[in-house]
Amino acid sequence: MYNDYPKTINEQIAEYDSSIIESFDISNGSTIIVDGQQIVNYMLYTYDGFKTQYPLYRLWTNYKMLHLQDFLKAYAAWTENYNPLQNYDSTETYVHQTDDGSDTTTVNHGKVNTVAAGSGADAPTTSNYVTTDDSSTPRLETQSTQAGQTTDTESGSTTTTLTHAATTKTIGTETYTADKIETETRKKSGNIGVTTSQQMLQSEVELRLNPLIIQFIDTFMHTYTYYISGGWGSYDS
Image (tube, rainbow, N blue to C red):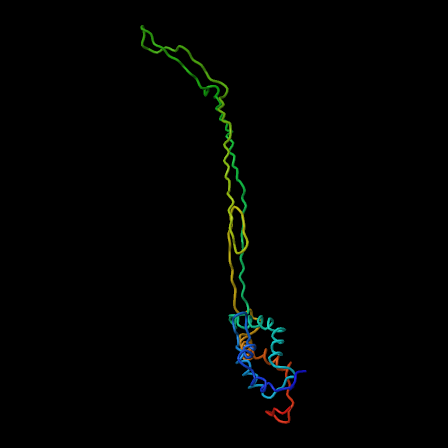
C-alpha cells in the first residue's frame, strides 16, 4: 500500500500539476472528448471527501485501459445523427434481368398456283385466221383447244436472325450482365407502429438527460472510491 493512503480525492487533486491533470483526458486518438480538468472538477464537486486506497490518477489510468474502447463505441452510437421519431428505415433494390439470346425467323417460300383448263364450250380455244390476195375476208387456218391444267410453283426460304448483345451494369456493390437490365429502388422510413411517437420521444429525453460521460465517471467513482466519515465534507482519515 502507498504511504499516507487512504487519502481523499480532494487532497490528491490539490497536489496534481497540469501533466497529471491531462492524464484524466478522455480522448479518441488525438481528439479530446472531455479534458482532464473538467473530469477532476466533476469528481470534486460530486464526490467531495471520497477516498481511495491508491493514487487517484493511477486508478483512473487503469480504468481507462480496461473500459475506454467500450466507452468510445458507446459514444459513437450516442452521438450518431438520427431522427428520434423514426424507427424504420429500409431501402430495397430490385434488379430485373432478361436474357433473350438470339431470335431466328425463317420464311419458307412454298407457293403453288394451278390454273385448270375448262371443258366443252368453256374450254380455252386458240384460233388462227389468215387472208389471201384473192379475198380480204379472214379464213380459219388452224384451231386448238387447251385441256388439263397449268401449275406455277415457288420454292426456297428466307432466314432472319436477330442477335441481342449483353450489357453490364453495376448496382451498389454487385455487377450484373444480361441482355436487358432494369432496376427499381423502393425506400420506406418512419414509425413502424410498434412504439408510439410519444414513447419514442420519452426514450430520447431519458437518453439525453443521462449523459454517457457522467455514467463513465460515476462508474469509476463507485468502483474505486468510498466514503466513510463522521459528517459530510469532513476529510478526517
